[in-house]
Amino acid sequence: MAAPAAQEPVEPVDAHAEEFKVLDLDMVRFETLFHQYNNLLLKPSILSQLQTLKDRVEALRLAFDRSKFDELRSDINLQAQRLALAMAPLRTPPVPKTDRSHTLNLARLNPRPNDKAEVKAALEAVDAEIRRLERHVPDLGLAERPAEQARIKRFKDRRDQLGKEFSKAGWDGLVGELK
Image 1 (cartoon, rainbow, N blue to C red):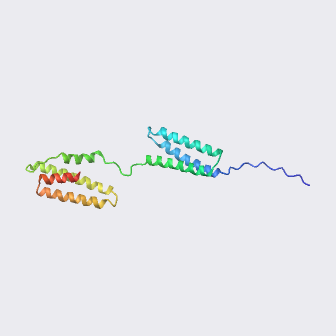
Image 2: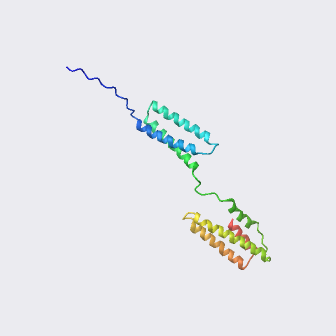
Image 3: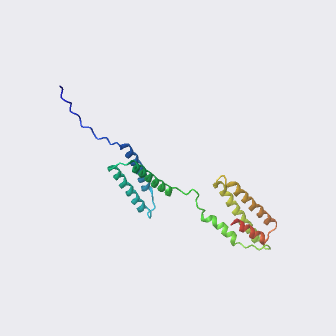
């Protein structure tokens, strides 16, 4: 009889190596976003969340559980998405302060119908406001553009009426509608 051949020691194959590669990639993505984040007030709390997630990954390495793996992966991705959303530029930029100053100037104007210079200045201010509104139409969504264009046309029509026959009531109505 032949002597049994000496078996070579078999390296323990990590049965969950692929899962941990995915977790590591998720953590790297989250950490990369964290390092790009620049809000110094909120960064310490996000660092705490990051450390908690790292601790959970290490605990999972010791005792793998598929449901805990899925939950942890979901939590990592959720935190990464929240951070990415916080860092993303606003979808609708805020109205610049200069845009509001035009409306405030119109509301402050109080032209007297019998003073041609005041009427002319007030109508020029309305024209400037209408031009400002027209410049912002391309920034609107496709669904919002027709309504805004119709609104601007109403302003132009009212402005033309005031140009022909200026009245205090007409002026107040136009300024009230422009607000």
